[in-house]
Image 1: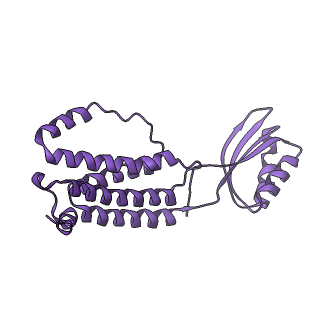
Image 2: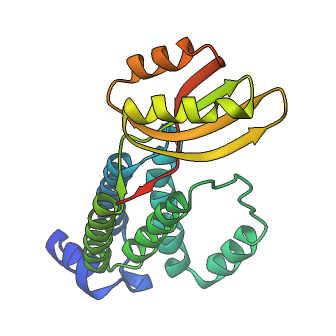
Image 3: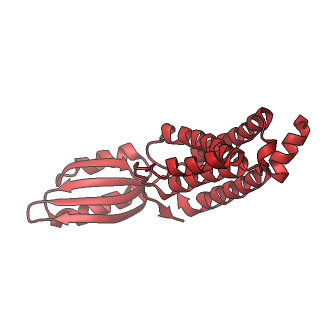
Amino acid sequence: MGIKDIIKKSFLQGYASNNITLNTVLICLACTLVLAIYIYLIYKLVNKNSFYNKNFNLSLIVIALITASIILTIQSNVVVSLGMVGALSIVRFRTAIKDPMDLGFLFWSISAGIIAGAGFAMIAVAASLVISVVILLFSAKATVKGSLLLVVNANSYSDEKEIVELVSSETVYMKVRARNASKSSLNMAIEVKAKDQGELIKKVIELPCVLNASLVEHDGEITA
């Protein structure tokens, strides 16, 4: 069987156990690697976490390649496939996934490896293109960037009005997300889109009633 025939089978027809040769394995892994790199780039583009986790993104490439290798092995030998299933049944993934979107990319990487390993790379390519278009389309329209969280500690609850008026004059958008008050103190968390971040924090801290203030980025989203 020539290289062209192997490529044709890897994209359209699927593998039979007696057709799996070294060339077949290399072409399958090459196709999987290209898909995995594509997933890697899409994740890096749409990631909205405050801290980009490069190790998780790299793991998407590794997982796709490992999955494709397992599928190839399972197809080549029934006995090996049974042993593989038994071995994988004791594996537990204990790392917490904080962002649901990360879980989606994880399943995408595994699915791409399974489909490409089974010899249907064309389906994996088509599915990846559709998935990426959906992700890019909805991630672009679903949120508005630039939201910050202003945390203010003041002397008393009666100072809230003064703080809110100042923050409102220095921002294009503001909303009080949380307040914790007592007779001797007031703690507020205000979601803001500042005209000038430095000027905002300077004017807030200059208020006589304010003890301290912090302006931080948060992982929450503002709906458009």
